[in-house]
Length: 136
Image (cartoon, rainbow, N blue to C red; front, side, top):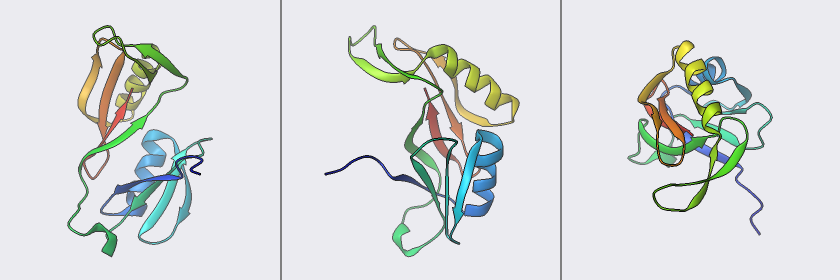
């Protein structure tokens, strides 16, 4: 049976350049460079991010846009949404705000600024290819 998520792919125009950005701006570690594929991950995380350069598997896909990737900012807690009543996993709001401010200080661009919602806080950052990644 399935035991976990091994990696998440993000399409990029230059995997080595993107890996350097993920390392410098987000604090990721670079694990392997395989030419069109560079594997990075948040330090200590078992989940890899596959920065995928142009290859046949892309088809008509291209870099940019919402990825559906969620980066948590420390401890994950289940927070009850005040509107829907559902409890969902998110990072503690104070940790999200602290991470947002740290990333802004490093020059990370955000397509959606820090926003307070009925369940906590989130922001959406952009990598050098315009891929959008949520922190919440």
